[in-house]
View 1 (cartoon, rainbow over the protein chains, first blue to last red):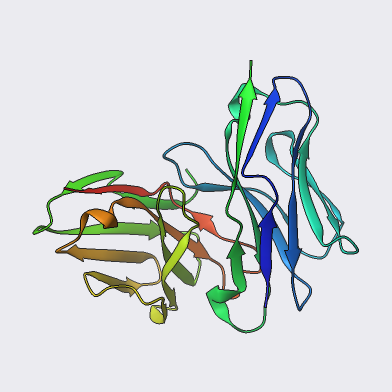
View 2: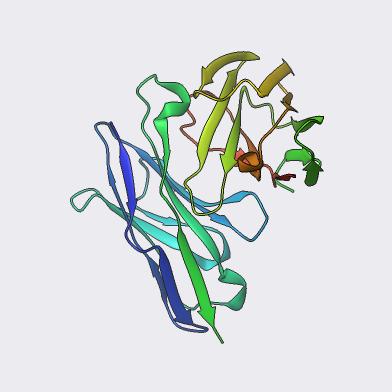
Length: 116
Length: 114
């Protein structure tokens, strides 16, 4: 069985400062991990994904995440926040066990607020 | 655009109406999904189709009826809905059912039941 925990429901940072959104996971298999972003009244857009290649993954819009197996973490970071980054962020784990769509588990989301 | 198109973007319907949501993808993906996203609740998986065959029905009420005529199109037929069914309905697709490379989502249909 797999699970995802997003440690903060809300994160507030000032524009131009670093962003850290935390995600921990548990998985019985070697997982794929994803971060999705959702702007208000929009669908979910893939930011980046880890699928057992390099542990430091670079995504769109300057975001990156590091897969740390020993800590079972996949935290999302960005060096300098922009106002347009304000959105809901979802950490997702995919554990292929032949179970189809049940293999994709979504976190509850972190609402990122950018202060001017 | 992500490659997954949902129509309409917004829908207001009465509890006795019948309406349909449409999802279309031309990414060559074999699996398609309906999700419900309500305020302050996690994403809820509703239905899964793999190669046009329904493989998952997550205890969804019968007032929601999916249809997948081919691998590129997915519908969600709605009838006699309740106000608590108001939500953002998201369609997604993936290359294969194991979703190893994640999903591509549409922009959603914002449904309001009055």
